[in-house]
Image (cartoon, rainbow, N blue to C red; front, side):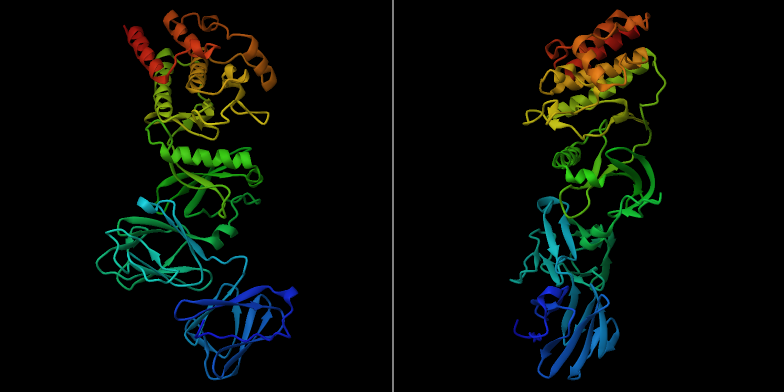
Length: 492
């Protein structure tokens, strides 16, 4: 760059001990990186202004050799200064950053709405002007939207790997976490903050914060936060991960699902986890747990899933058997969820009491970890020798190599109804024995355990759990219609 020249002592630099870079950013936004070693080097930023530098104790010591200019760090001026890692100083209208070359980014700006949803801008050690029609500067962010002014806001780095926003428009609003930013007002952006520019919404994410977070404290404590969500408790844990209770920036409760670190080395797990997030964010139904936000697996940030926190509990510990009216009500609510899933082309494949929540408005279905879109490749019960699904509620047709379809979910729903009416299922604990029984034996008639069950009800359940998919109801809508007729008949 024209205004910034540097001279590094070539004889003193040992390439084997390079540790960090001194990044110089001129007033025109152009930048240059100078390698920093453990030996002494020299730096010249202007005629007669020469400084020496030396790496000492994870900080860069800068000392004036000639000239009168001082280094400003905040409000203080120095002729000799130790510049810590990721801190910014000012010298002759230039910014000086001491950075790790493996960590070139300070943060990310992610689009959350409209045509910019999913678009990500990488934010480095420069100033970024955000507006509808930017200049030719490579670091400008152009947002071609009628509610955005030409110069909407400026984003610029501060000390200690942080970013700031300054509102530049008096006619178009800029908000941070729903709080209006006044013209020329500066707001420090925290990891996870939401930026609203006109009618567009974006999220700021600190790369440094992402890399330093520990979601699995070993001392029994809780992480303070997951992304922008404050952690207030733990809802559960298992072999796949942990679910924390949290609150968002507005104080609303959420559930935070965090996969265990070792699973992130499994490409198949990453694929299933990302599929669950993708499916969940696209599904909107009162019988389906809403997914509010996600960080996908396989990226720089640690993955997690943000769900609505359900007011209720799972059906795992509900006393059984249920009375007929209650069992049929729950079955109808479950079939309503399945009808919606199947209309969207989604097969759940893992219906069980642990994935059904009883809320004040009825049953809600959760956990789409092994769901898939119908017709996709690789949707069979076995994937590289692994059975996908809970053995007790698994469709026996899938054990025979059949592809999972909507009738597989109907089988699981029928088995749940059988259990609710009878009180238990006649399966042992060993999964291999469960598979053997499913492949060779039919379930005992429900009247063996509950002789008072109406014949029409038993026939309805038998049709749901028939071993051959062709003999079952062929859709959730068909099963729902039959169930409504059955309930009407039983009520007479």
